[in-house]
Image 1 (cartoon, rainbow, N blue to C red):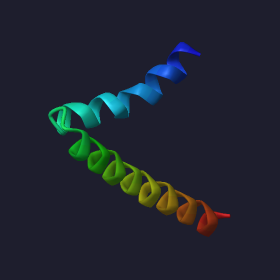
Image 2 (cartoon, rainbow, N blue to C red):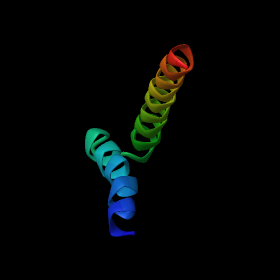
Image 3 (cartoon, rainbow, N blue to C red):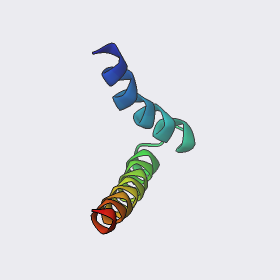
Image 4 (cartoon, one colour):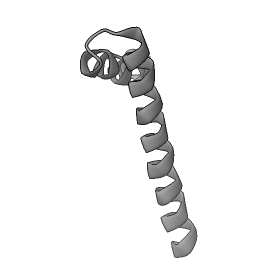
Length: 52
């Protein structure tokens, strides 16, 4: 449970640090990280489909 909480809070802390504490920039940074995560997951799923 503690590890899961740490994994969830790490991107939030990273976004706040990168955005220097500004709320709008923090939300934008989280959105960009979400899009990057979506693209990465989609690519991995595509690779797994082609191997199967």
